Length: 88
Image 1 (cartoon, rainbow, N blue to C red):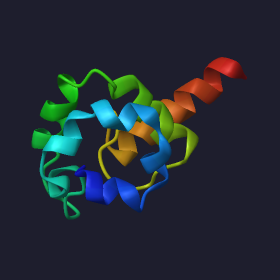
Image 2 (image 1 turned 180 degrees about the horizontal axis):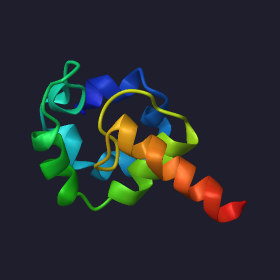
Image 3 (image 1 turned 30 degrees about the vertical axis):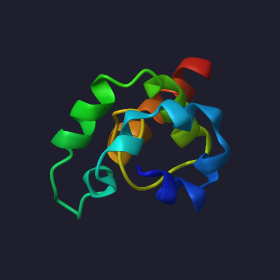
């Protein structure tokens, strides 16, 4: 996401965001319309050095929209459930 988008986000205070590749790309790719492609955003995430930090931020803050750490909301929900099952 561009720096201007981060300003209004809780992620704006996270130090990892300064190294996020998404800050150099179109934010709309990370928040596609329902049914839209997530391919471009996930491709950017693949090469990002702070992908893990981004994903953990999204999981911790229960982000409901967008691509975070290379995963969609559906994929993050699945990961949360798997983690709960492992700790139960």
